[in-house]
Length: 499
Ligand code: NAD
Image 1 (cartoon, protein in one colour):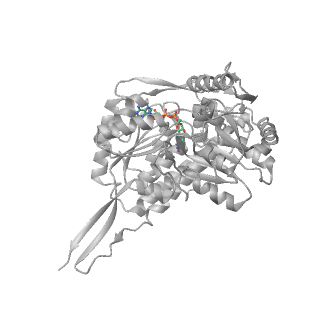
Image 2 (tube, rainbow, N blue to C red):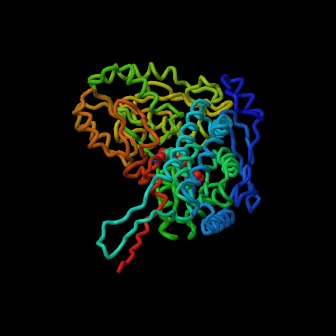
Image 3 (cartoon, rainbow, N blue to C red):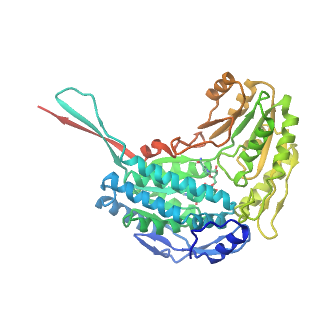
């Protein structure tokens, strides 16, 4: 089926969706196979409730087999010892194939987890850009000659780690995947990907493309299944050298235990957030800032790790500013994810839907002022209106906990010092936003924010050349840029005695 032309309307996307075929099996040792147990699980389109496919539910036996194959492939060296310039060519070919099949891949993510199709296309641009960037980087990194005396030569070599397991979430299925697998593969590792059980389909299609691009057998494998089964098996494996994780802080803590209980594998965590977005009264264009503040939380239905879920507004402008946010929210209502005009789509599944509505009920009970939204609609799919609470305080659950849904909590502050204290009063430290025209203030506040990234007069700006990651309980890893490539390699020091 040709999905390469550009669909532009809801009807176009519906037609393409109806003709899609799904790969349902795991990809192990260069072949698509059923789970060893024969078990499957249903993956569901949350916008319709339809079962899209029964997907192989991998477990310990599949993990063991994939790890064995990955280790053998690594030791044989077809990929791990391939010249970096050749690995680059293969990964660039994979990027080209992803570009050719961009519409299909985006559609798989939209159907699987409910995000609007235009958002999914944006994710694909990010995923392809990441693949190209890491591919291009790998043959431009040099080792070192250390500055020792003349009686010796000390080399510092950079080597791949071995077997890397990547466990990823469902909110940006292919983009999070690319952020992990592109640097890990570029560095020469064998990679086993475990997609979320809520969005496995695009990862399985990616496996086909990786094979077509020429990634050798056993170097890239995909194991769909649940976290507590196949995810846990990979995390506890004695033969996995590195675990690269994106997901919740709770699961990140479990993985830390698993690494300690097994082989002290390297562990990189990209976890949750409750990001503050601080608006000072000196902002120039409040309407524009309000538009961005609303998009910062309602983009991707609020199912975003860096969602600007805590809006901290200087009290002198709070009433006016919140009105402007409410005006912006009016145009951000959820709609059919296949409609290119929808700003928000469906909530990923019923568990997440009920969880978000539970937080909304708690917000009302705890005394916050509900200014917009608050309702869900689950007749034919799972949708929640963009919800805004004002008068939120630090003690309220909606003010502290990651909701991972379209719920904005607005706080007021009087002084810069108070804003910084409120922003930092969180277990998380993933992102922070800051809106002000005063450059002195911008630099003062930026330096004191406990956050992996700070967005000044924007939200979610970034580039492949800029690392992405958190501090505190938001994790320790850095995706993107040359820093992510460093995570998937180790330094070997070679001391050569010269006479
Ligand atoms: P999750 O932690 O429930 O699941 C993430 C992945 O871990 C899934 O593949 C899941 O199957 C697996 N998993 C679950 N339990 C496991 C276990 N015991 N052992 C091994 N693997 C296990 O998270 P989610 O609901 O998929 O995603 C939402 C979370 O991800 C949010 O907290 C969000 O903030 C975070 N996130 C963070 C970033 C970032 O870059 N920091 C990016 C996207 C999402």
